[in-house]
Length: 506
Image 1 (tube, rainbow, N blue to C red):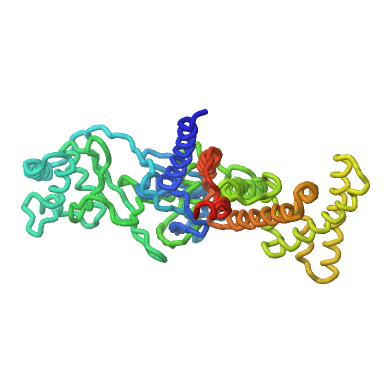
Image 2: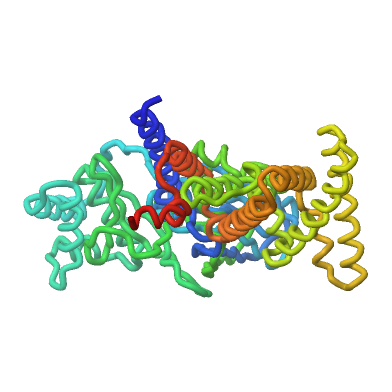
């Protein structure tokens, strides 16, 4: 296969890995660090009323579409009440029911939301509203205002902005004064605006929401105006005509229906409280992916059982160790025994730590090598000899663990974490090299193996790198592309530059 195909394959693997990584990072919000937190707001609604005696049925409008926010979780706290969430014409409705109760009652509904500016909140396109039925003289006042505003506007959005400017003018005309003569509350004002917009054949509705601030004991719902321009819904401040919602504005409900209704209760009061918290960004990202029904979250590491996740959090770091092995051997020129023996030793170093891992490994290999030379005099065949070395390695592990425990050095107990088969093969390989090429080459190979294992351990032990690989395992495709490219490298190694330095000088 020519280098062109190698480059093409490496570029394809890199493009796939980086594309998936970028989507999960930028769109789904997967964090790049394991300590990154995302702010969430908990909104608690308490409904207070006097009941009974008799059955109670309480209904509360709750959020449905929340531009700029995603819903993490919601639940109710209400003793002895049945609870359900129903879809109604205006959105969603929480409902509590009980067969019989009496006295003062309090029902709680809590919702946890997080910021999600790219959430899919597509709403239905409404039909053009029918002309409203308005009695005179308000009918004439509405016609005059609509005619005046239409002459100074070009579309639904500019009509709405101009209308709100006219009705909020410090010196309004007689038609505006007549229209607003009996308006006492902001909610009534927005309701009148929707009537005027309906007369202009512009779909409009009331929305009520709150500005989320930390530790707000008494939050109030603020009425806002929402109009449809034929393409999408747009939001306007009813007091100044400015388009857009305030920062951290959570839409609670739409329409002018009653916020709460209690059948069988009196003296109804609704209170809102807001508190800001911080949670793990990964949990929010996974929730966002599930809401969007992303295929990636269904095939991610988090979809596996927790015990399996713990296993793969280690296994996914092995390719990083393999990359270190390739770099140290093909670019630096470090000799090592075995292909993946240093990587497996590096995994054992994760438990023993680097210094004691090197000490224990060196001691184990040195003792095993001595026993191997004694076995050489028996002139055993290959398989029995390897089996004997393996048995000796196990016994040496046991002796080292018992001796270190008796001396109060618990670190020696972790020697059992070393892969015994790999160590047995290493001892056999060192003994063969010792006999064929001398002790210098054998010691150099063993030292190189320890050096590669140490570097691999340092790379595989980086917490941020482990988080990146476990959160974005698709980046292993990039690692694979690098290994493929290094597999075709035939240039000088760093050790050869030092080795042939004298020749280059001449």
